[in-house]
Length: 337
Image (cartoon, rainbow, N blue to C red; front, side, top):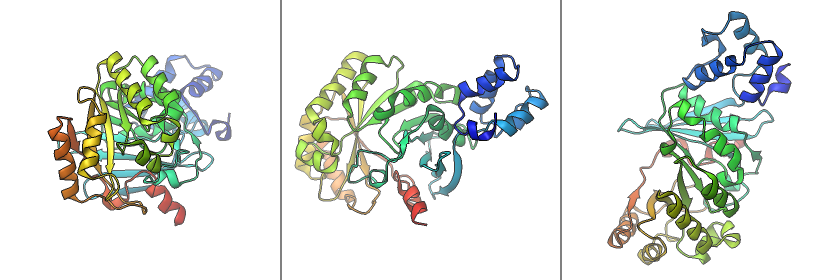
C-alpha cells in the first residue's frame, strides 16, 4: 500500500494496514494514544517495534493534511493554513488566553457554500466537506505545539452540513485533552443538521448559533440561508435544545458598523431571545472588505441595552487581528500570493 492510496488516511485505514501486515489489533490504539498526546511522528512511538515504525513512516502519512503556512499574532494567536491531498485550503487557529486556556478553532469544510456576506470563507470557492480525520488533524497539529483544552467548530464551513464527520471528530477530542463540555459546535441555523444534533447527540457538547441580526429582513441580507430557514424556526429549534438538554445556547453576533449595531436593534434582539435559554457573545468585526466594524462606543451601547433586558451578554476579546485571523483570510491571501 503506497502513499497515493493512503493520502486520506484515518484510523480505520491505519487498522487495515496493520492487519494486512499481521500486526495485533492493539497497535492502532497505541498509535492513536501517541498522536493524541502530541507525538510529532511515528519515530517517537517507543512502544512500537522499530521495524513497524519505519514501515508506517514510509507507507502511512502521519497527517491527512499538508501544513503549508503559519502566522503568529502579537497576542499569541497562531493561525495555520493546510491543504488537503487534492489541494483544497483548510484553516485552523490556536487561541491563547491569559487565564491559561488554550482553544482551537476548527474547520469542517474547505470553503463554505452558504455565502454569508461578512465572512471571508463565504466568498471563497467551496471545496468539499472534510473527513473526521482531516478535522481532527487540525487539533492534533496544535496539540503538538502545546496542550489544548477547548475547541470550537467555528472555522471554515457550516458544521451542520457535515455533522457526521464533525461529531466523529468531536467524540475523539477528549483523548486530545478537550472534554465535550469544552467543545462547541456553531451553526448558522441549517435546520436539517441542527434537528439531528438536538435529537441524537447525547454527549454534553455545546451549541452556538451564528445569528448577527434580530430580524428576518436584515438577516436574509447578511445570510442568505435565512431565506430557507427563517429566524422563528431556528430559534424554536434552539429552545427545544435547551428544553431537552438544559444547556444554554451561545449566540454569536458580529458587530457591523451602521448595519446591525443600533440600540433599537439590541432591543429587538432582546425581544427575540429568552434569557433563560441564550447567552449573547458580541464579536468585534475583523474587517474582510465589505463592512466596517462597530465602534467601541456602539458596542458598549448595544451591550448596555441587552444588559437592561437581563439578557446575558459578553464582548468577545479580539484575537489575531494582526494576522488576518478571520475565517478564510489567510487562505485568500495565500491564493492571491
